[in-house]
Length: 489
Ligand SMILES: [Zn+2]
Ligand SMILES: [Zn+2]
Image (cartoon, rainbow, N blue to C red; front, side):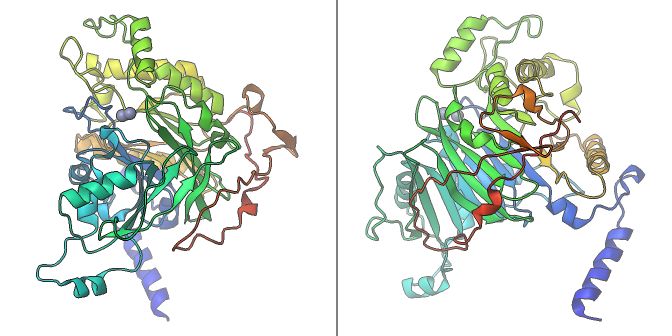
């Protein structure tokens, strides 16, 4: 018997005999099924008015490859600490900073970028005491430990702060900038770079539609997971990211930065529609029957939100409807103190607290109601710190519903035993199917019972690969794939 077979048998034995928290949870989930579930975990869900007592500012991590690595989107002040503050959980391992391999920045506002440098200083390890330059060079890995993607300015920001804080680390990082035609390229000449920096790519958007296709990719459990990006309207330049499987089951996660109008990214959000849309809702009109101290009229709330480049819940819902999003999570919720000195949109203290009838949870429920009504395809969920959204593989076996029941049961058990904000909102790819007759996706045609897409247009964006394994992707697999949107469910 080979060592591999012995190991497999041993792990199966251990799995079958492990004690789970309750008898209701005693169903064994094959490891492959767990890893084939994409997850998004929120580390900070407050708008720039935060951090508040219940929310850190913007950051989330997505596990989209199934290989234990994490891709982070935005990195507010205190993001590093959020890793340490994860609520205790017995049935799953906590996220570790060392799992983060890529960071995607939506825009340069302070509530989205200030946490990058502390993260780098931890991830790249301090230089051992007494190490000279030659020894240090020999110690360093040839490739950067972490890759950062973001708008013009992110390279200078990271470089400057690392230089000004006299930071010396062992490993290397790289910053790739997503540039518009009018943006200045930031030099990567050796004399201007930080000692731990590797020259990054300057990735210009398509001159045709302003989008960045194929920004980067990773090898997912079923095949390549591609990253595309597009500009969205905020009061300063801002980007939305799209993580999508290039092969079946074609799950797609759209994560928008701050915006009052994301319509420019729409071509990336259809064919197929996203499994999950994460949209900001920085402000909302709360009626007095929900919060007796609410004073602001609807028109004032909406006008100010748009003037600041932000959205109300119903705007998020309307965009979700336009692109046929199957799940909608509201993020970047108002964190400033309101007139009544009550936190405007406080997070629930726990998953259990989420269901309590009080002003705190009623305000959140009202925000969700407004978005859900505009969306019309399900119940939108307002994110809270450490909330985890799961997108299981819809083709998994045993049947999808059994897996959902199982995981939900475990989470509920966990939450009642440990009253924390940690909870998983399970999502099923098949739960809310898009009805093709009610959406506004132009250019589709129907063939043999499935909705098919147009061949993807290659935009010819120049992108010089300097390292890595991402040169040889067969994009033809992504052409004409069926969105397989069935009526009803
Ligand atoms: Zn913000
Ligand atoms: Zn902003």
